[in-house]
Length: 198
Image (tube, rainbow, N blue to C red; front, top):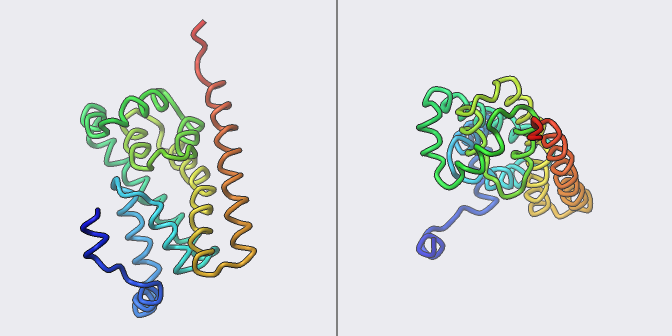
């Protein structure tokens, strides 16, 4: 990481915008495709969400990011269904126990809870859901709904960096508050939905 920081020059915001402008109508589609690929891998989706805010602003960045992240997450889910539980649990490594604990026999609220919780990457949730039998419908709806607050919070940071307005700053604060509140509510609902051990 240190070598990369010292030797690799990242493009400036202006250069990135020019590159996407040169793609014309293909620019947003290229971004969606890149985001979907990132969501399939352990690379943090945070990077793509912040870049979306920088390049496309809050409304456009939100639409493109949500399309990309849902496609990528759903792709990971179906890859896991094809690979099977044993293979996926081994591949999840240190995440396996936590994911199994939260998603085993889980459904909509289980996926919402782990998707909303800060610090849990997207990819273990995607692959764990597919491997542990979460229904496709529950996974897709939960992902689309619960990814939105976190995505908006990150896109708003990018939009604020690109254009530090009061509106963009307010969206950052409000969206992070929403993430915290929704995480708590989803966690409580998920806990109530678990079968009683008594």
